[in-house]
Length: 461
Image (cartoon, rainbow, N blue to C red; front, top):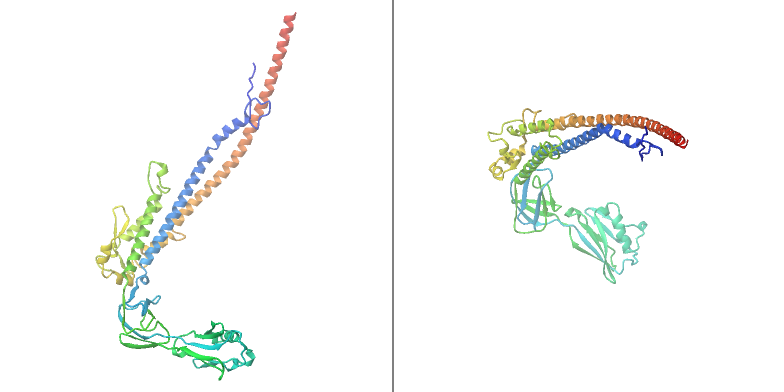
């Protein structure tokens, strides 16, 4: 019985192949590869879980930062200060300080100035000077004068000597100014205000240059609520505790400075807290979304870790708000005390009317509050610290998922090695079968030819 031959394009089949060895092996391996495809799907799912956990962890960390800022008294010892005449004086709170609330009347009699002295009469910036040692510059009680060793022979060199002389360079800055083609002026500007930093210049007698005092150094003089002050600077930090005054100009009209509690700082911190919670809740809902449609299902929809964390947070938010030491703040000390309320969808909302109704809130916040307080070591903030810690539930859950990935990758590697061996065995087995079929087919053809020859021979006889 003849065995029909089939064509083959498989790389493992020879030109006389009877079967498609490569095709058969490929189909067999496609079946064997299904466990690896399943592992790949599991790895993808695990990666999505790790990504979702990391995103939730980031949102939780931001929420904790907002919570800690809300509980930090330093963020609420804030004052709003205004000056009625900014053209006369400006005012700011000195960094890190809390001036007492109140009102101050400021009258500026004179502002502090620095010295300005001009040496005029030079015909050029390179004019020959034979008497440079005759110039002397006095700053306060200290006198400076060039010597012959300084070898000063031009106005330019005199300028450079002033600007580079030890100590003098910290008190005076010299500049050469060209008034016209034949007149140059060496201008000396004092670098510090106040009468103690007066700059004066003497020069050679009978020379062609003249010395002009353009502006004398003077102290600032002003009154605060009728109290007289004298300072050598226009920036005043030691007159009103916690305030920095900057005098701009003298005026007979008093400048009114108001210092009040800045409630906007409180509202801003609370609004940030509300925003960070809502962002965290949105992340939670997205990660745990349930759906019959797998494409719409959250990566952690069946994971209890996030649900447990949100329950802990909400339990803390439901507790009465207490002082930093755990003391009661009164009956109305829930979130409404902060002007915050829960919406029907679980999000938080900042209610301006509730906030405005809490007149004592700025003072309470400035003394420090604690949310989710059970004991000094058990608060909402400490709970979040534990969750976010290196051995917390989130870190453990991420590590667990990473271990799952590691195990899946090991299984995949082992399977791939096993399948490579299996593919070699299948190829060898079917190649042998192909060779056997080829031989049988050749034998069949030879027998057929012999029988045909015998039959033809008998017919001839």
